[in-house]
Amino acid sequence: MPKAFVPLEGRPLLWHCVRGLLASGCIHVVVVAVGAQLHDRARAVLAEAGEQVRIVTGGAHRSDSVRAALHGVPDADVVVVHDAARCLTPVSVIRTVVQAVLAGTPAVVPVLAVVDTIKQVDADGCVVRTVDRSALRAVQTPQGFAADLLRRAHQAPSALATDDAGLVEALGVPVVTVPGHPDAFKITTAFDLAVAQMLTSARAVDRT
Image (cartoon, rainbow, N blue to C red; front, side, top):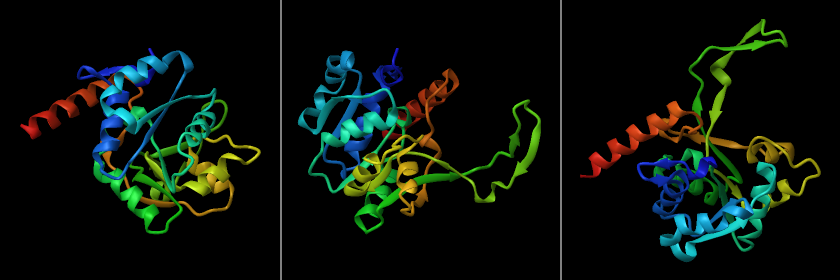
């Protein structure tokens, strides 16, 4: 099934993601980009959020989906782009990103230091060199932007990148980092889902 609808503690990842964004208190509208055939399913999952959630049809690439979502918030001054697969991102990270943009930084991404040794390899899998990890960072979401800047980045002729910060970088605009959080990891494998289940259960115990 589409990753956003994989269940975690009885609720889809998408539900957990949207709940976290709205719980931050600084996100007023969430635009969810899904395939046209998934509109009804997404609406049903997010029905309790009411008018704070809008559903739009995504595209073949990430940038196409973000561009479609931007059309859903034409009056926004600040936009954050988030992955449903990072549904356990703490609200503190969301607030930090938004506050940094509101304070005048036009592009902000949460990051973690890279702790593994990184090797660059050639086409045959042979090590070319060991990369200095001291200046490397693993980028998370949500990524925050001044809305006009993000719209301009998505209008560029080659508006394709693995993240939205990459599109902004291509414009020559500096992207500032803020501390991320280990809980904001991307749920990609069955192992990741198992970790997410343990974290969700632990949070539920902490709230009792």
